Structure formats: structure tokens, C-alpha cells
Length: 238
Image 1 (tube, helix red, strand yellow):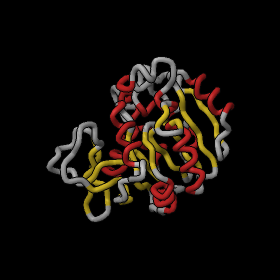
Image 2 (tube, rainbow, N blue to C red; image 1 turned 180 degrees about the vertical axis):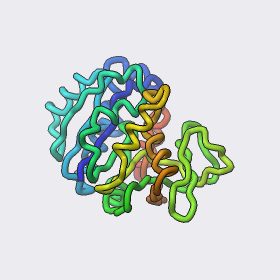
Image 3 (cartoon, rainbow, N blue to C red; image 1 turned 90 degrees about the vertical axis):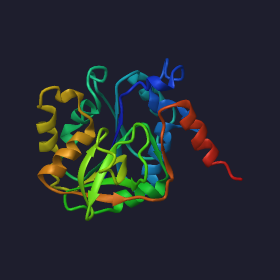
């Protein structure tokens, strides 16, 4: 299975760390976020990774050349990263989205066992990796699940309806319909401002998206300096 990593953003909340480098190259522990992801994907059995860069994509190219990743990796450039949301980066790899694939956010560190769990899932069409929540946190991508299916997904979902938070990872089957859904969402008024989760939401309303449950907690979204400190603290043996 091929994996797509959406890494076009700057990460302004991590300034000044992202003054001269994209968010995905910020060091967390002993590795850049991107290196955490590539090593985890390799251990999980991914065959190839495609990294979509935008802000300072030249730095990503230099990084991949200086530190060859543990699996074949291609870098693609999203020239519209500054005016579009994450859906613009998905559009940059539209040609790869007709078969089985895994797609993930470029600011999330996940332990290999989580990605192994996700990549081994066999959804009939599309699967979304998510963990159960009791109380939503700021910036959570909220998910409503019912009987194993995703009913809704959105940042502004009514918290009373939210049962899970998304980990930003989707797994698609051969005939997921994802590419057609991408076309429909990006073609809406202001469609370039959509998140890639809006494609998942579209498929949840028009078909079926399976929820892939993850309860280990061995992951982190890196948005702020305190997220880095928290991850390092959790990974430091007592």
C-alpha cells in the first residue's frame, strides 16, 4: 500500500521553529516529524510514501537527500499551499487516489503499531482512524460514530454528537470512490478551503465510511511547542 503524507503547511503556531523550515521538519525527540512518520510507515509495511510539500518544500527535498528514508519516497509540490487548505495537497496527488492507499496529516506522530493496525484494516470502501473521547479538546477533528460507521466528521461538529476524534489517517480500498468525492468537494464554492476530512464527510453521507478504532494513545498532533514537550515526556522512561 502507498501512503500519502500531507506536509505543505508552515505551522505558524510553532514559530520561531518554522521561520526557515516547514512544520514537518521540526525535531521532536531525536527525529523530525517527517522521519517519525516515514520510519513508522516502513515498519507498518507501507510500500512507498509520497510527501506533499508546500512551504519551503526545498528544505524537504534537501532533508530527504541528506537522510535517505527507510522506504521509497517521492516529494510532490503543492504550489497552492498558501491559498488552499489541506484539500489542495490532496489534489496534488489525485492521480494516486484511484486504488488502495493510506493518507495522513503531516503533523502527527504515530507509533508503528497504530499504522500497522490502520494499514491492515480492510474497509469495504474507506476507513477513518479515530479514538473515543469523553470531552473534546481544542482543534479536535470530531467524529460521530454509529454501529461502526462514521456518520459525521467536522471540526465544528456539535460536541454532544461527537463520539471520537480523528487521528488524521484514512485507508482506502480499491473502489472507495474517494477521487470522485474529492472532485465533488473541491468543486463546491470555496472548495479549496476545505479540509481533507471534508472528503471523508462527503463519503459518510453518500456511502459508508468505517471507523477504525484506536485506543492506545500512542500518538500526538504537533501544533505547539508544548506538544513537543508533552510527547518527549511521555516517551521518557520513568
